[in-house]
Image 1 (cartoon, rainbow, N blue to C red):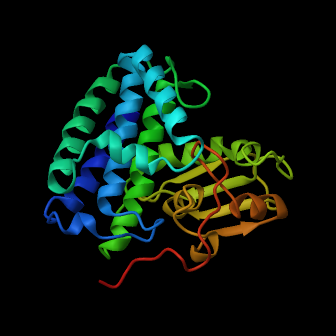
Image 2: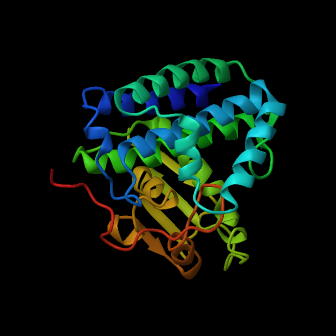
Image 3: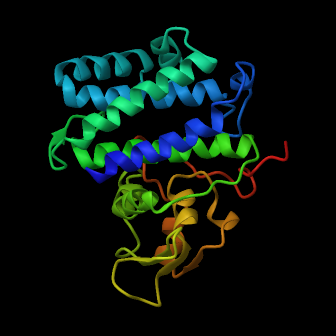
Length: 265
């Protein structure tokens, strides 16, 4: 499954960004909710493990999810993630995360993309599951790139994130108990390699066009749409981009304009 390799590509890029950091560096806070680099890796590793467990041990996964729900009671997941990680931090956590995602990507390469897997919400296909792990790695990786003042260089493997962003157009509204103002806008994006990716019916009335990377930034809520160069036309498109959310869970509010940026360190 190509998406499994895409997940590994993105994870490898994030590992390369962090491989020379000290243990102290991992205790520094990012712009995302004050999470440290340790917090980011805890989150990525636990939910990578959960997605893998859903495939290899469905019963074990269901017990895990029941424990998460009962202990968090709808609140922050962070205390549970810290407990689950059992004291790992810094470079040790980095290597454990890396060893696991490498093996996980190999496992998912052989999985039937259409196989249904349990998750915290509705079941999803194996393709969607590993694409979600790619999306999470890319999105949470952005706070690390920003913190380290490094310009990210994307590849066309981010197309799975774009597709996820488009496919969750209605989800953005469902999680808010709302309905879209109209059908999916026409989305016309330029990939990192210069290809044109198009979604929806061609329209000049409701249109989103620009760089695929910036569309990913908006649907993963790592940037406010006003902090990108996306061109957004029409009430349906503008409303969607003001609240787009391609990830599961309750409604989340995008960062305010100017709140997320590459630091000057």
